[in-house]
Image 1 (cartoon, rainbow, N blue to C red):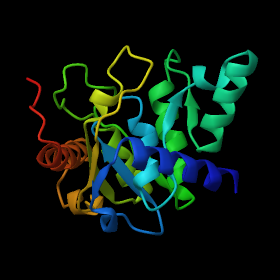
Image 2 (spheres, rainbow, N blue to C red; image 1 turned 135 degrees about the vertical axis):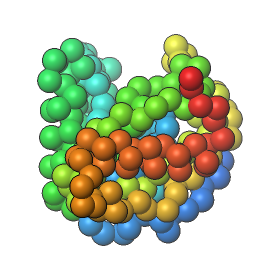
Image 3 (tube, one colour; image 1 turned 45 degrees about the horizontal axis):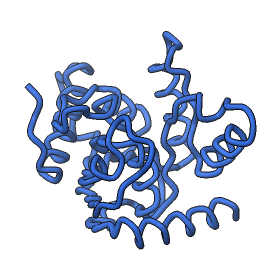
Length: 214
């Protein structure tokens, strides 16, 4: 109930202040495991996508959001816990693998998990090559991948700025990609992961209109 109330409040604020243009909601399966793989331009991407998606989407968030002290720390911990984010220790040498394991648990429960194949926010506005963790997750979790493209969020909260600005944003959900299509006779696992990742990134590129990083 707390999540639903918080989501409603955030949705009202987003639609009034950011006026998001959303397409392709019907491409997201209403039930079962699914991965939403998005480009990443701003911190607010992890809040905006769950707001406009038709189901609860879990993202990872740095552990610092959950460990702060004082009133600000408690509010931060309550907020990120309530919206369903999973803390990750970025300085942990095994952080990447632990993140995939946490994500796999979400998928095994039939949930929706959000991931940024680029690995981090784009600092130059270009779309960078995707890492194959998204493909590993899709194949291990037997989950379709819905490519997602956000536009304009870098104008709302540029890197290094704490106070958001008013700017219209867009969120586009692409056609689901079935990971099992990559499993063919003679295809090596590493090759299948690379091909699936490249297919996801190509779909994101078509929707985002970003220049590709060299």
